View 1 (cartoon, rainbow, N blue to C red):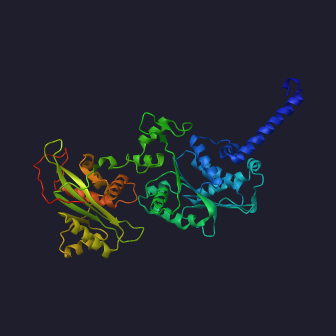
View 2: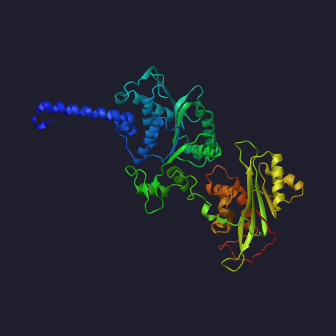
View 3: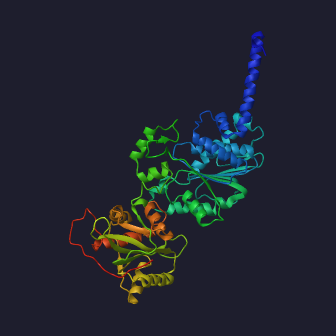
Length: 496
């Protein structure tokens, strides 16, 4: 077509036709592409590379190709805008007869998302993309409304009742908040996990999908629970996990930000230098058990490769007991340690500590007593230590009545777990603590590395009890200690 030969009126008509065609193309794209939809209905939407990755995954949800998705990403990186607001609206456009449940840590915040989704569905921009989708006239409250096709949207806070509700799509957006962390206890995290199991998970329709999009808070948060349950139960829900750290290639010369359009590297580095390393590792890097926050790091342990341990001069067995054998209770745990001497490199005997055995389980008291006796009999330790708390007090009495010499451990006031771990951290840092390459030893190493943000700390307690006893008895000395005449203790060989 020759534009030069057109009259002014013809050119205007032609431009209008081009604009209309371009508009129809964009509307068609908005129906099949989440980010095109986002830009169409929400001009303020700022797009990053991580949003493009999320959009592809969410498209798979709509197409029925994915059912269980976890997205972990830093605060203020647009996760809620895309997942809870724009994707929920887009999903309803594709399935106006489906039921959607939106959950976050408070009911008021969930209702705010519900209000925004409802208002978007009622907008002219939305009607252009999904012209057949309308709200039901008799149900338009912010937290609970219906579509004219019979679909339902329901907003709920963590802990809220869901009886009678169903979901083809369940979106859980940040089920935890800073208040959960500030409580200093496991309770809020355990309550969120219990609520998920008894509420949302049981509300899912046949073939329904779940999206968990959240900032990590620690080794007790919902992501950790879901993945732990998946690992221990192969038949359970299998989750695809997408993690977005705020800084990529952290602590290298190639550090860069996840979302450079919004967050400069300088800004994030200042944030990292300002907040507690535990919070940075969890909330910004999505790695709550990072060695950067561990008091005893994984690489502080030395691995003993031979099949049998060295000849040990003094053996300590350490117990930490739980109150009872409920599934949600802590474990009763036992670790056995030995001191051995090495003259490699120095030509003089240097004391080292090696983990000889580790065991933990949930047990009623009669079984606990039998197991403790069996472990004592197997190793005949030179020192047998039990923390005098929970089932430890009666266990001390019972074992003493059987003629077993047992020492009780009672932490002094102010001598909490963190203080005790700090007190033995230098022993690990000195390279004098060894462990075999076995499953049970790896469990101890991982639990120590996860402290103080880990789900369990039973092995942590038994470890600190044993190593403090070695320190107090003069079995292990550090270069920083005041020098004194060393004593060497002799005993038989022991084997795994």
